[in-house]
Length: 378
Image (tube, rainbow, N blue to C red; front, side):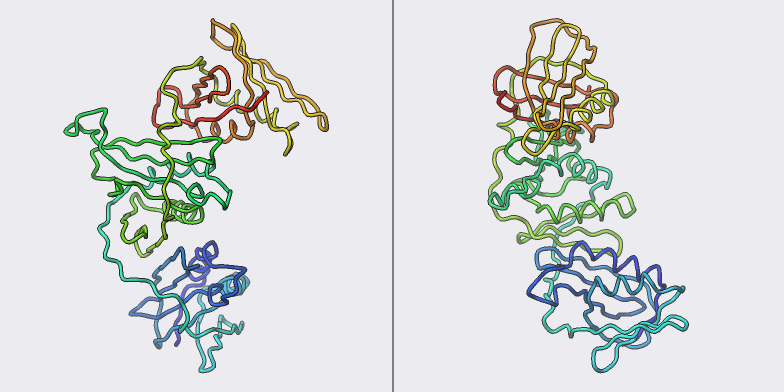
């Protein structure tokens, strides 16, 4: 097995696999990537059995073959090689030589016999705009649960369905939603369209945390569209010469729609940057044990306070346009920051409710994104 490839192309191709391969595993081959030659190109495959990435790269093929190598070691070796082209050659004892000018590096390989095999794709794909994929993930990713005991919340829920609010014949007769919750907060993104750019996931699917991160990278890797299809508990994404396979979480997702308050609360419009700056000031004196920022809405002003006996106290008052009854509640300051910093609009809608009822954060004049946050006991 032997081929020649541009050093920068090879470095980038291996780097893309590092987020997938297992670094601490009792199965050594899962630390490795599979490299296989083909006609005028090589195939690089990485997997942790739950997620698989297959990519193709142009190369000058001298002889055919395949081998698996440590992804981390190979990446670090290529990174330190100074040159434009690398000659990759596998010897009979599964040792691989990387040759570039006067540099010769050796790396041991493992035969491909035990490397996990991917099923052949027989999936109906739908082209989805990358800008939509990135927006949905960016506005929900932070709200996923990290509690391993609640597997169904360790990911995002994706669903597309007919929009019951409008006749199906209208241009926006379908919606695609992505939701994430950890039980204390919910982030929900809703996109409207005619359905032609939404994958067929009427019943909804749960994409795992690690898979969501890889999908985000794929969508950010150039191009306008990514093709998405689902079959047999696997979500398959395809873009140019790259195929990403993500095993879905086999569980039931909670009814997130019930979390969104049906009634209105006390709503104020706030300058996004000013509110975010105030919350970050509060977070300076927060700690693991005390992250609760008290927020009080009064006529003409909103007061914020976070007191921590071990660190200190922060107070700020913002001018607002409001006339009505006073209301006060406490929220996890980091949850508020997470929800607001993903908003691109200048103004933010902040809606509070009495008692232990949630607040709702959204973009002013845009109902596509909302974040629901439960209050803390004061």
